Amino acid sequence: MKLIIADDEHRVCQLIANILPWEKYGIEIAGTAYNALEAYSLIKELKPDIVITDIRMPGYDGITLIEKSRDIDPDVSFIIVSGYRDFEYAQRALKFGAEDYLLKPVSKDELEQIILKVIEKKEAKKEKHEQENNLQRELIQTREILKKKLASEIADKGFRIDPADLPLFGDRYSVFFNNHHFQVIIFQVDHSKSDQEIESVKAVDTILQKTESAVSSYIAEHVYEMLCEYRDFSLVFILNVKSSSGLSFRDLEHLHELATQKVSEYGDWRITLCPGKAVSKIEHLHQSYDEAEFARKDRILRGFGKILEKRLVPSADEELPLFNMKDLENKIKSAVDSGAASDIQNIFLSAVIPPGFSRKILNPETVFRLFRFTAESFIKQFQIISADDIDTDALLVDTERAISSSGSIDRLSSQLAELYTATMKALLSSKRVKDYKPIRIAKEYIDEHFSENIDLNIVAKEAGLNPVYFSSLFKKETGINFKEYLLQKRVDTAKNLLVSSNDTIMAISERVGYKDVRYFSRVFSRTVGIKPNMYRKIYG
Image 1 (cartoon, one colour):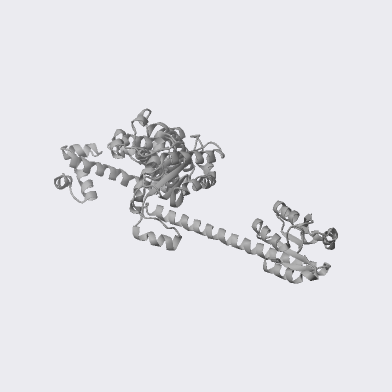
Image 2: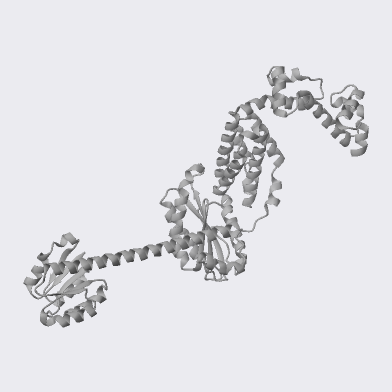
């Protein structure tokens, strides 16, 4: 703390300066004045914590000095020094805010007691001030936590709000919406390099926090209330805007510039700003969100790092028929059957959206549905190989995260190619999948040759196994033995032919591997429960 001594007697100033070891109390003598004008000038310049001053000095008296100094710093503490003849005057000074007074000649013990009292009082005041500041910070933090909670609840409900809930927002969350003019805007973070790995976005949470801080002050000038929800790679602002048209395009440009400057401090990151149109009622908030979210998705076709608004496009249902989904599904089956990483990569890089086809897509949802279909088809094939060795839920979560985080088709393709190639490699390393491969070969051989005179030995040789081990492994993987599987395949094919063709029973019998039609009829009856001709009459 800083101390100023003021007395028109030089020896008194020296006495006070030397009477106590001031550094012991954490006090330094910042200045000495020999009249009230000098004292006032020093107080203005040095902003002292304590002033020891004579009650009467040239210029003006101690009471006036106290009054004028209070305008500079109301917290400065005054200790008055007076003679006996000024005793009553000194007591009056206490009423004007002096901490205490000393009678001349100044006593060391008395001055020490007064100084200790002043220090204690200042420390108590400082502690109280810190407590008040801490309480204020806690209140602010608590309100921010409550606002985040409300934003999350609104998002979980699809941004659909019942106007009757508005009073509850005030009671529960200290959020007081005016029931008019609402808008949703989204700040999306993307990395400029398409080959950036998903794991590298751990810093995104920090980037989002810094982005929120960078734009919140400006947004606050244009709204009654604002909430912010974090969504993996984006900030979703729910705004109770003052203007019926929402934030102007100039406002959006300024916000985009603020956010862009902030994220650029962390590397090659870009911000895409996606506004929904302002709505007049809180119950229509979801409409504004839907527009903002569409614009966010649309960056995969229109590019990221700029301001995007919703545009009119065909529906995904209208665009999907452009793509041969059955052919894609067959390619996926072949890729999984081969187990080759290059085949799986090629599916994502060139088969989902063939070269040149991206220019035909106008709706970003078409892109996402194509890649979701591809992912689900891969998972279906993985499960056929070994359902026990694949965490389907985790794979779907990672797929959706890649879709949400990707700002371009190239980035999405490369991320999913890497994800599903890694999954295929993990599956191929498991014993169960290794066991399944020869069974898959056997089943494919049976499907192609069931109409011929084949037996277990022939099929086991095709699978590369000895018949005994093959028979055991086949039943373990399929749940039925080889003969039952072959029989079921022949009977199921016969049932289809009886219903869908006009072939004779004899012709059908030969097509499914039975030269003796009477034997075929007995096998069919025993398996299905009725003779072939009766089956045709009932189901044909």
